[in-house]
Image (cartoon, rainbow, N blue to C red):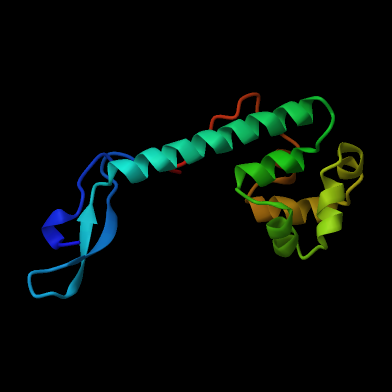
Length: 139
């Protein structure tokens, strides 16, 4: 795309710019600031809607006693069992077990602290699950 063709549509939020590569008048690649591109923004908004729906489902499962709060925090941070197990340096089967409320409650303080550290929260916050699943994708 040429430098003067870089989209300047509605982006994530006002004042935030993204960088795109474009070709200048000399045929060289240059970095060009863009406010956004409408199709990309729409696709990202739709993806965040799916994530919020998944969060609502995890909250419902936690409230019904079928999942531990770990499921909410995994989903909130866009992690699956494989990714969390690699960050926690634990086998997948152990992380999968920790999604069970009864098992989660019995975890050691050290293991809970390890999980909390991965999510950047306190151990007390690891046990908390909000009432709603609203998230801010731009934070």
